[in-house]
Image (cartoon, rainbow, N blue to C red; front, side):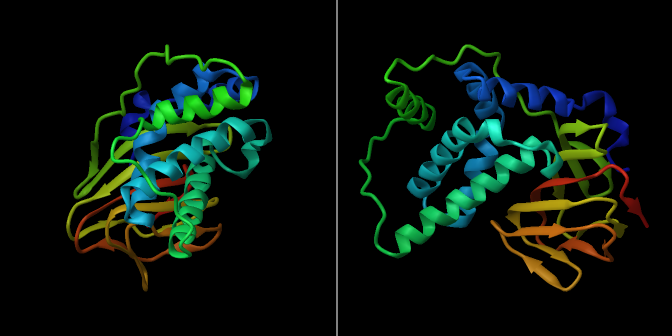
Length: 238
């Protein structure tokens, strides 16, 4: 696969799963760790869907609050931790957008608490206690690695047991991803730019899901693009 050259940089899926299990057990520290890893990506997706900063912030708070409430229900057979969080983010962003379009959006003050502060306050209110401040090592996204001409990746997690990988993928303008056959479920959230998958054109905020044994004959971007991609390590490149 394209990202094989950076296998030493992969964070195992088991590390993400352990954080989520700790969240399910009531650890706010683990929640802060997941939030530090995913907040930028979640907010970017929500911003692309809603086109309004305040709605994107609300959706981001909603997403991690949902992670807190629903961590115990996560099923690894349904996808990676990153895929699960991204699906939650998409749902909450769409909910906030629909509410705003229906005239039900809340009014926001100019000076708002940070996303982390609002999430902590919501959890503390529910628990009738004081939220635990972040005390985890800051998360740094891995560097971009050019894995092929016009294709760069940031590898976020790898599940060797289920042959899955979660990553950020960036195509340069007029860049192409190789034609491939899906060996498992592929999920793609487009964050920036435009992307063609065969005859379908995706715009920022769009989602594409493909099942095995389907394939994509041509994946390319005229503008250049960035996406979150969760796919199988057994995909066959052509």
